[in-house]
Image (cartoon, rainbow, N blue to C red; front, side):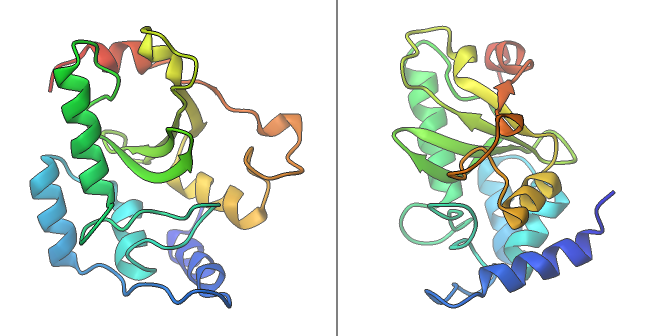
Length: 181
């Protein structure tokens, strides 16, 4: 079991490494405002990550979206994906799954906010024609575990990642995509 206080301290150290300065952390009021706009709460580890480390700008590759603010944010991308999903006939983005990072080429890392642990998913829509459940993969059972993998530089996205780091299909995808809010 991960000590979240220690984990967030280690994430903060790595996030603050030399490079671009981090944005200030989100305030608890901004988190509450975001949750109100989204219509669901954030898992506690995700809320603490944004409030105690920074409002995005750190993490694997392209770095976490800001939670809220100007430009491309987790909240804005979620609302955009849900809007496209609902208007297009075929639902491709489940309710309560917040995109936190853009991997590029239409791929996202997202947190299932319905899971207390903050299950981390990968949305990989390339080559998917319908059957949107096939675009969803389980990256980590928890946000804490996902952050540990980032800290240890052993994620599937690392250049020298081994075959043990391959992601698996998200078994709940079909069910969650068929649910209405």
